[in-house]
Image (tube, rainbow, N blue to C red; front, side):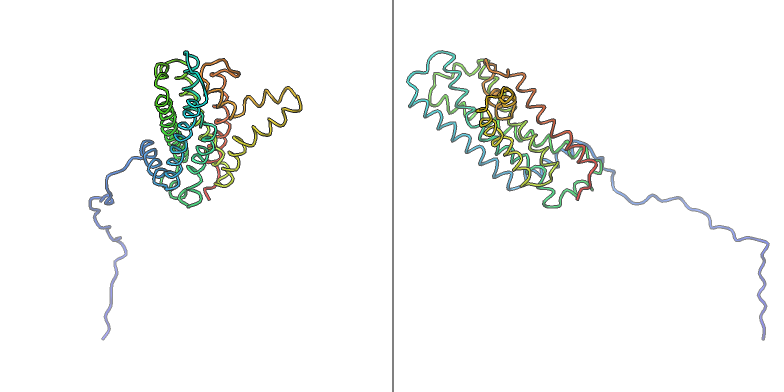
Length: 289
């Protein structure tokens, strides 16, 4: 038995009626803000054990050095009288540790950026924030803020130590040289941290970053002291604008020093910018690996 199938080709099949278009089931859209990036960088930096240990050692070492200096002044200096002597005493005790702590603060700046490269977390950070500029700015701001708080605690703790050993010095706390010297020391340590941060961002190496910042803060001044025996005039001029010398000028405040307080602050800002600007450009353009 044979069956014949007839197909009518004159009529095309009609498409099925389209129903209402459904949107993909997604949650509420989350907007990436700079405040959120800043908060995430703060959490990441403070969660590092090495950072917490570095900060604790910095504060303890700074306060111990300030107390030791105050005790030496009380035992060795026969008379500390008059506004100028009391101001000098306060500034010396509260800022005495800053040249030594500059290296520790520099290590903090290095850790702030190289810890992510060594752990590979930088890939997750840049995947979460593909526009890299907010990540770099947030890291720099968090590093500066953390350093500022640490430096402020150190300077205020040094002033408390000074007054504890010599209560008569409390009357000069609000004097202009003491205020500018204390704030100048805080600014110096913050700019040192940013200088180290920029160098480490360029090198992407913890060992390399620490070596360079140690060379700038400790080796260069010694080298220029040795060059000073040659009698060349340019040596003293360049030496005055090294970070260590600028830190000493800022610690004196508005006293009669060369370079002056304003020029020293500007020169330290130039040092930090010279490392931060190329580091920011490289952070945006280089491969994250």
